Image (cartoon, rainbow, N blue to C red; front, side, top):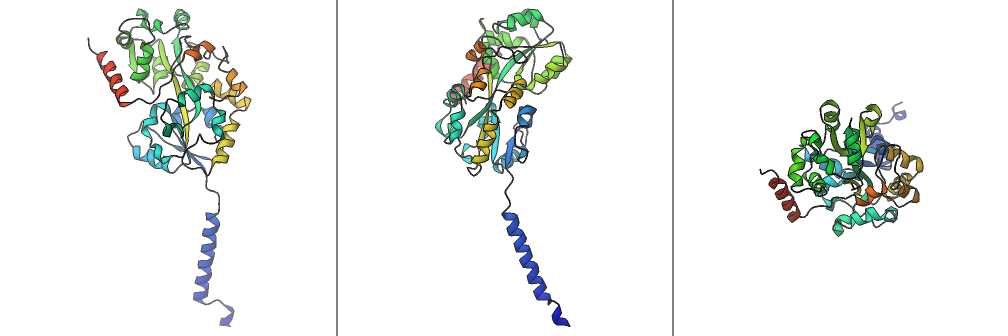
Length: 332
């Protein structure tokens, strides 16, 4: 009678074998691809292009918990980052990415900007988006006409204390250098209502502010709901914000290339540009978008693109010079 039933030892051994089989089966399942990104930097149309079976890990370089960022980046296959936060990452943690066929996608603008980085950084950065800054003007047609040509209009007496600037001395200094006036930085700062990156549009909509300077990708949605707002891109050019992709593993190159290639579909290109995101690739259709005058909001003209500027990583000496210039402008 008892021989028909497994002994206790046989039962446990059978259990162990079943567990080992289960673990082995799980280990053979494909690992879910992870991509780390700072959610607030990317328009929804771009985030929607990320494959649905990838896991999007939210990071925040502005937070006071840098270790959380490092842990998420270390455990992710890919990382998206804009040029303002490049100095916050450790390039030794990433693999070379521009040795593959991906580099054939890049246009001259992105290749030139990559050339400003050192060789180690350059080989690991893939430009995946460029966002022009724009001037948003509230209820003032006279200002719109002036702003189309240059940045000089920012020194108008009517704008004293009514301009919202990004919280970036480097961007403000770069604009001041293009204003035709002595002591332009000091004068420009005296026009400010506030320096803010997070609540620029709330300030503009709910205060006496008349002008705000903001990345195009962060404001397109407001144009649809507030008819008082108009966008202007001066022919003199605008600052550019670059976004890069980095890879921690070369095991997923095939799926990475497939995703990037998918971005070049005309419907996706059009949707991205509607939300202020330009792909820096060399296809004819994409390049035509850098020459459009209106699409469907007034994007940068060809002349504006030609005169626009980017921000390479600063050397220690350049950082000191920037701080000195900014501090000097604070003195009476």
